[in-house]
Each structure stands twice: as C-alpha cells, then as structure tokens.
Length: 312
Image (cartoon, rainbow, N blue to C red; front, side):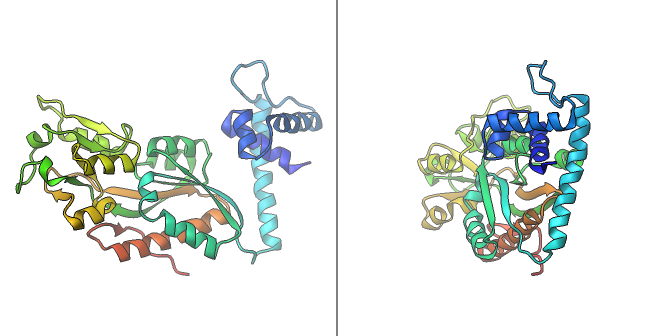
C-alpha cells in the first residue's frame, strides 16, 4: 500500500478541501483525487461521501483515517530507528504574529539556516486569532502567538511553552497628551487609542479599561504593527504597544512613554502537537535558545524571558 496515498487521505480529512490539500502536499487537485480513488479501489470501499456538498468522509473513511495515522506514525518511527543519528530534516510550517517579526524572527531564521540546514521553515504571519484557527485545523506544525490557547492545548493535545513577556505601555508624541502627569482615562478618551487587531487580547484589555464609562473611547485596531508605529509617530493618537518596537524613537525623544492605567503584558508562547516530528522539536528548542539570548541582550526593561535556554 502506498503510504503517500494514506498521507493524502489524512490531510484531506484535516483540511476538508481538495484544493488546500493539494497546496499543502505541493501537488494538483487532480492528483489528490486520483490518489483517493486509487486508495478506494485498493481497499474496495468508498472513503469520501460524494453525495454531500461539503467534503465529508464516510464512516469507513473515518475509520481508515485512524488506522492510516497509526501506520504513518509507525513508518516515521521505522525511519528514525534505521538512522537515529540523522539530523532533523523536512518542512516545518510555522505561524507567527507580527510582534515576532519585529523582534526576534530574523535571528531565528539565520540560526535555523546555520544550525539546522536540512530543515525548511515555512513562515506564515497573521493575527493571533487567524493563526489559532489554522493551528486548530493542523495547517501549522508550530504556532508562535500571544493570546491564550489553553482550549487548543486541551482539545488537540498540544504542548504550549511560554517564551517571553513584553510590557504593554502607553506611547505617543510628546505634544499629543497632557504634559508631565500620569494619564487618566479621561485623557485617553480625548484621543484615538491605537492597538492590535479587533480579535486580539491587547485590544480586549484596552477596551476593558473603559467598561461602564459614559464616554465611548476611540479604539483603533490594526493587524499591522508597522501601521500602529507610523500613526503614533505621525501624532495621530496614543499607542498601547510594547515599547521595544520604538526604542530608537524613544531614545531620540521623538516619542515618549507615559504612565497610565495598567495593561497586562504580552506573553509570547510556542505550541506544537505532542506527537510532532523531530524537526519541529528541534526548531522549538532552537527558538527557546534564540528568545533567551534576545531577552538577555535587550534587557528586562524591554522584554523578559519566561523559558530558560535549553541545554545543548
């Protein structure tokens, strides 16, 4: 039996789409269909319910998927047992939030190329909400994001490791806010408040500050960190972001940090399935090391490590 056909069936069950399965396996929809048909012919059963508009496996198809996953896991173990000292290799699909792009993603990619050259990182940058949904459907091997994913960990058997913590502070052009005093809610109600996307934890924390007040604040949400930075530099409003994004502007006095209502820090975590491939474990271990080095170099004023660097 061709294990590539079994892999195709498992992927089709996870993604519920011939098109997305073809993209994930770097092939065509026609090739995916032919693999499923060949598997059905070999087993003598129908695996896909073709009477439904939405893609759905038959009851027997669902049973075959369970067995196929076990066979693929055994195949992986067999290959590892034959070459136990082989370096980890293959594609690792990583979903990351933009905060990581603006901090330690570049040193991570450089170090992956240097230390794990047989691994191909496939990076997707998106909001935490969108990334979680894709991770839930197993479109990523690793998820690096900032919102709570305890439900994903419990339901899908994921391992979640805290990496670092960024303080969330109020930042603006000096002329935008009242001078030399701690900001009050009424100060923040007079100017636009800039923060992350509408589905993000940081935005929810900002909104919660104004719960029950008569005045509705102007909370402007952006999925792009760069958009928040540019608007803040342009004097459009006050930003609730990690100050590490604008270290140079703060040092030059172009922007300033202001005291105000406390906001929870942004905690970055990495998640992956417990039964994941050795390549994913290797990338996770290297990520922890890179983050620990980044935090030590930047200093706790800007970011603090939550996971010690793993032993080599």
